[in-house]
Image (cartoon, rainbow, N blue to C red; front, side, top):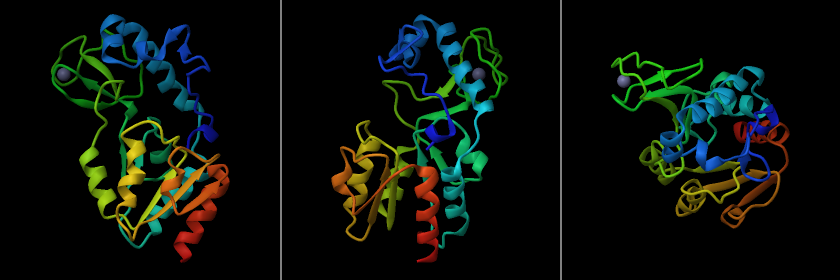
Length: 221
Ligand code: ZN
């Protein structure tokens, strides 16, 4: 979704960031070992959100939510806030949000647009050293899986956009939705994927072009 908006992946072809393995900046162990490094990684990503805008694909999904006659839920693995800025309201960030921070001492979650550091004090409990990005790291559980599973069990249309289908549990969502015989499964991607066989319909192309067309079709059906 957001690649076409220019959101940097920060992940090189070699799986490194500034010479550090991605796991070092995206795991509880890495955070314990070098919190300043981890804060710098996410501070850069958070600041980079100021330089990007939602694309036509984000806007199309927000329109679908506004005009769809039935229930709607957007589940994203993205940690940027482009869906919100496009107008989406019913959404779950299963891998967390760059513009939120959490205190590991008291569990409070805050909206956060500035930098984080080891010396950042929690505004709720006053502790120093417990603040971390509200991001799901390697080895941690994605957020709101139960709500996602419940939505999958009753879905009439399952639209899967731009995921490789190799990272679980998200990779299992298509299979879960396909268990409901009446559910129509649509995959949109720039190429066919590992999970393509689960879908009734495949749309190959960029989301900024294909998603507005699909939304018009769904809304006029
Ligand atoms: Zn706290």
